[in-house]
Length: 417
Image (cartoon, rainbow, N blue to C red; front, side):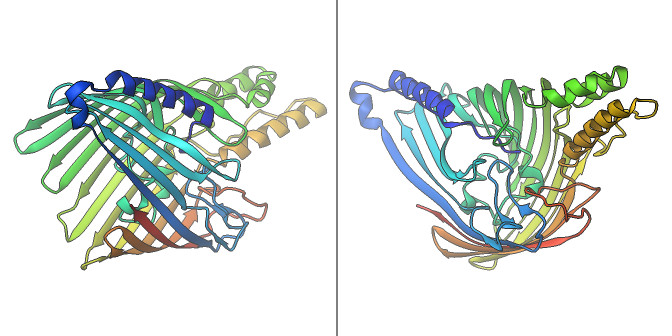
């Protein structure tokens, strides 16, 4: 789940970033050193899914309509963005990035994705404050810039799980070297608004993340561990109802209630790219400790470059680390009306558990760099939701059957300017 903060919060962070910029603004002769650049990026893509009982989407908070809603959809991957980079002097710099993309309200909105000031304290140590992209996975920093990806999109099984795309806070990065290996260790602290869907917004507090990156020649490794306290309203009726049935209901509420839970993220990934070919892979686990899921996703991808054409293949897998079905409240011995209520609560709980994605995808695709700043891409995915789960589909219809594979055809163009 990739959760975006809403515009009021974005304005608050933007104001803070502007204030920090003013405080950091150089004076006198230092102004001559200031440099600024504005860059843009965008993706235009059309997607067709053969699954007519649900909509294929890259992220539930940026919902696409390919499948049940539309035969061909242009909202699954399409987005536009702009970035302002300012270098005040040798130590102070700032960045602001905005994106225009599909929102949970089913319309396009502008989001403030980055807005931070950086201070290069020493050649090795840098500090940032403001809105910062969390480095949870290899491509987390640039996954919205489609041109930077070898694929048409980052593997959905892993990247749709990102609970918090960015945080409002601070981070510190220290670069060091051991032999021929270059390291960068980053500590992140902050908070965020976590948007689960159009009706539910959670608050992520006390975000703490530690990321270690190591590069040796063409090989890059990254490891991340992070956690946050996530408070999610909206499920009180279900869990209060369960608790009303005594100890069995209390046990279910203790296990699944998302009202206030520690969310933990662990990930490890590698990328080997000597130039003519590449192989990359990642594995990550996100445990919400609640009905929102405990899932592990992995992928392995490889590609070969023939001039400006690069075919690739990817296999991705998403599994649940908890059962997606529970027997729920025992009905035996209950009065008729109480049994009906308990049965309804059980069905509601299992419906929510069924939303926890379990699926695998085999993909082949090709990238064609037709110009220095333009890439055309085509990708075919064979997607299989499993274990009674709906996988990563949304808007699922009564006729949906888990375990049945379907195809997704995507055609896109990525640009940077």
